[in-house]
Amino acid sequence: MEMKDCRIAGLRDNKKIHQAIRTILKEIGEDPNREGLKRTPYRVAKAYEEWCGGYWFKPKDVLDRQFTESCGIVIEGPISFTSLCEHHLAFFTGSAYICYIPDKYVTGLDKLVKLVEIYARRLQVQERMTAQIADGLFKNLKCKGVMVVVKAKHLCVSSRETKNDTTETITSEVRGVFCKDLGARQEVMNLINMKDVK
Image 1: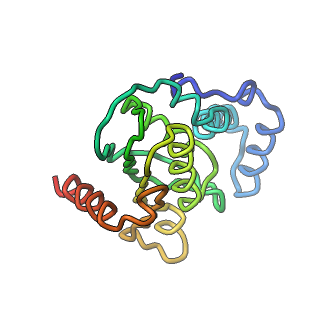
Image 2: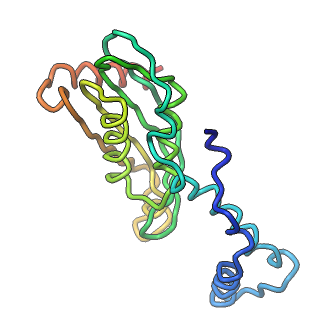
């Protein structure tokens, strides 16, 4: 499965979506018939096919290839992503770090990137997305433990009301042995911080 193949069948030709975009353009004082805007409804629908393509995949679709391997902590990141805030349909962008302790199996590193994409390409809140990534890996790879850290900047914060473009939101979720092993959690955070410094 390639995340670039995420498509919602027929969305770009959906007349209801096109009409809704035309209505928005009219209501903000624009002319949807002027040259620069004539194809905007089509372009917006096409863009949403990609931005919301994660609804059509499940974690098992990308974590289907597993390999028997014994090792310690595995960390992948920073994994960059762009998602849509479900409250304002505004973007939030950032990076995710996925850490897991295998039990019997590991998966390809690119699969972890695709796992983030599955949940980022939906209408989201960062808190839920972080939990979904952790649950998806923990349940499908059957790890001893999973830790996910997500850092992001939200356009709804930087472009509206407060207009604060420096703030960053950090969320984390732990599963399995990480729930009780504070030492292991600290080790992961130290390793993530080392990667960030570079």
